[in-house]
Amino acid sequence: MRHLLKIITPPILWTAAKYIFRSFTSRSDSEEERYGWFGDYENWEDAMNESVGYDNDPEIISLVKKLTENKRLDFNKNNKLIDNSNLRLIACINHILRSEKSSDGSFQVLDFGGALGQHYFHLRNFLNLQNISWNICETLPMVKEGLIHFQTEELKFFESFNSLHTKFDLVLLSGVLQYIEKPLKILENIISKKPKFILIDRFPMVPFFDEDRICIQNVNYGKDTSYPSRFFSKEWEYSVFKQLELLYEWHTGDGYTFEDRSFNFKGYFFKLRN
Image (cartoon, rainbow, N blue to C red):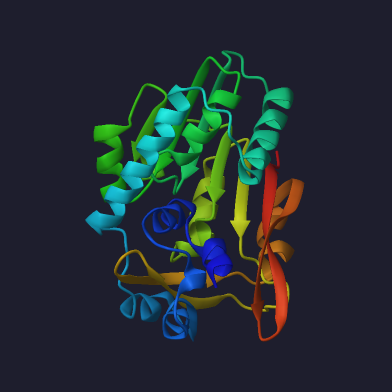
């Protein structure tokens, strides 16, 4: 169960849960049955009505802030620790830098759902760039924290990417589309901005699903909370992603099982077609 929670929980919130609670493997059977993914809802609204949510929870936001502050300290010490997820991001960014050099040497990133800058503080020391702009689009409570405590000349926070008119070199969507009510609309809006590249990581695409499945994820962050979550059908690969030029794809190494049939989460690196 602990392994499965890690797969579907947004990365920063999973870290927060680990930070203050003992391993899920030590839970009692009754606790094990309470946490995970449940239901098959007809629509997002029904799942939302049965969820508690975390967007406005000050305790969760406080934990995210503290963890990001630790990452910033590591960044300031030129920390060189890296994991497989960040290796994937670095490899894709290096591809962009090799193939698409801007005239002014700048690099523009839209990190959609990037919390308080976790990806930025993980990656910045590995990017040999003098002129980088890392823009995070998040919920209003996260944006308020970001503006007060983390914004710099390089790292900026926005509630809506529709207010941004920059032509992005990269749009990063890591473990985020499954928590959005209308992920296809968001992706179409992002494509309409004509970024050069789009990177989608930790994407729960189920190859034997003909339709998306909406469920509720129950998690314990010191108190019970829950929120809607989506598993994507194979149609996303067969039709939605076909409008983009696929450069690389990968399995994240994480998996899940529905009705005794297993699958692995995926990642995709796209270039916009001309």
